[in-house]
Length: 127
Image (tube, rainbow, N blue to C red; front, side, top):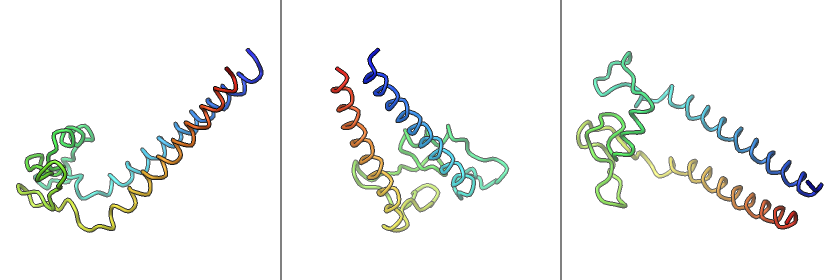
């Protein structure tokens, strides 16, 4: 293996470790927020009976309310409901709540496109 290939593999490995640590950090942040979420209790309101993450994932895939699992989240393909028609939980409180996820998504996209360009240059140097 040439020294350039070793350097390229080391850099790609470092990016992999950084990506793994980023995912772990995101998981911890979401987990801590989930512990304090009012949506964590079941539809009966019993704090001892909490919803699992798998239940929420299944409800998200089915496009149903995260609280009760009965009401639809969307009016149409691109229009989200303000509240659940079945249990009344509010889905969208204000426009400012979307700023944080927008910034995070934008920064991840910038980082990923920069990483793709950088890795492409490294691989073209090796080959």
